[in-house]
Amino acid sequence: MKTFSKFFFTTFLVTLLLSSYQNYSQTVPAPQVPISTPTDLDVGTIDSGAATVTVMDEAVLFYNPATSGPSITLTASVDDGEGNVFDSYQWYLVTADGTENTVTGQTTANLTLSGLAPGYHKYRIYGLLDNEGGTVTCQSEEYQDIILFVLPPLEVETTVNLNGNPLGYCANDIPDVPINLSVTNLTADYSASTNGYENPLGNDFEVTYSWFAVLEGGTANPIDLGTTTDNYDISITDAGSYTFYVEVEYVVKTDDGSRDYITYAGDVIDGSGDPLEITVTPIPGAPTITIGGITD
Image 1 (cartoon, one colour):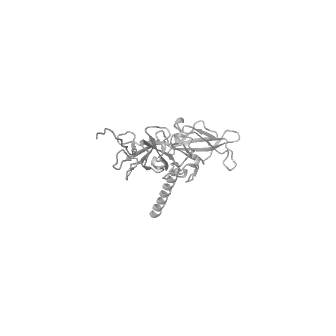
Image 2 (cartoon, one colour; image 1 turned 45 degrees about the horizontal axis):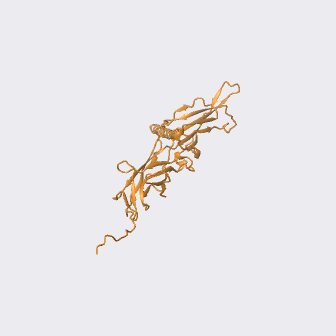
Image 3 (cartoon, helix red, strand yellow; image 1 turned 90 degrees about the horizontal axis):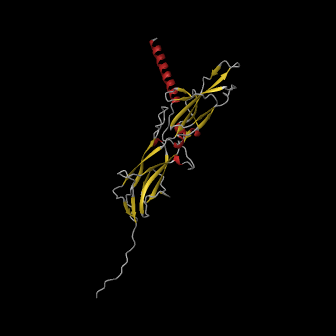
């Protein structure tokens, strides 16, 4: 009898733990790094009782600082697929601990959100039916969640390795071990997020890189150095003084370039905190000789 009781208790405990884990996993998004697709961010819709998300690319949004975040409209179905047409709805914002926070005044099929902060957002909807007399309202026991993710602004940190070189060289004498510029860190800004979710780090995202040089402190028509990795060996041969910066963009959501706020730039700074400046000295031509001051 004791053996049976112990077996029953152990089985019950394991079942309870598995159930708790499943419920918790449904509550908290689980990003997979490196993040390069919406699937990696675990965004989209998930039914109550389900363990995996149905991925939706549209659930990944850019953050526009001019509007304090993006806007989006969520639309619920008119029925449950079994012939029951909903009379109204109840929307909730679900925080990381699983708490359902009522979205006040939202009882229609459409929920319009704006000013979404960087990071995860999870919304839940229940359908409601009224009886014929309108005196009783029944809420569905099942629900559907949608997980959204707003891409955070990135701070791009760089470093310089002079490799023993001075801050310049002759145009025909690029150092054998050149001066190297590299991206050392991407910091994601989630300071405005209040939902309690553990958001991915900036370095968890795959990004594209573009390096640029600016000639003699100008800003117009920067020189695209054509390098797409996270580092660049300086190999400029045209004479002049140059400063440098790098631009990064997300891979998980791309754009045609019409939105400048989706590109994050980092200036290359030297050890004193000033912009790194490299001077390429031109190779002079041959001097000429003239004759003067003759005494013979």
